[in-house]
Length: 116
Ligand code: HEC
Image (cartoon, rainbow, N blue to C red):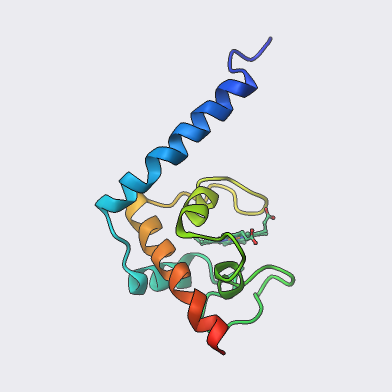
C-alpha cells in the first residue's frame, strides 16, 4: 500500500513544527541545574554529562560538553535533535519541562568547556 503522506508533506510539517518551537520554549524557561540532575539520571550511562567530561562511558560517543560546543548546536538544534529518535536510544521520551531543563544545561556547558 502506498503511504498517504508524501515526502514534501512531511518536510512542510517539520518546517512548521520547527518554526513553532521558539514560542513553545518561551513559555517554560529551562533550569540548568535541574537539567544537570536529569542528565545524570538519564543520560550519564552512555554520555559524559559533566562540565569536565572529555569522553563518554560508551567509547566514541560525544560527551555533552563536546555536543554543546559543536558548531550550530544551538538550543533550538538540541531541541530538534531530542525529538528525533536515533540508534541505541529507543523510547527516549522526555517530558517538555525536562527537555527545557536539559537544553538549558547543555547550552550552559558551552563556554565553560571552551574556557578550559
Ligand atoms: C543507551 C545509550 C544512550 C543514552 C542513555 C543516551 N544516549 Fe544520546 N546518544 C547515544 C548514541 C549511541 C548516540 C550517537 C548517535 C546515533 O547513534 O544515532 C547519541 C547521540 C546523542 C546526541 C547527538 C550528538 C551529536 O553529536 O550529534 C545527543 C544530543 C544526545 N545523544 C543526547 C542525549 C540525551 C540528552 C540523553 C539523556 C536524556 C541521552 N542522549 C541518552 C546513546 C545514548
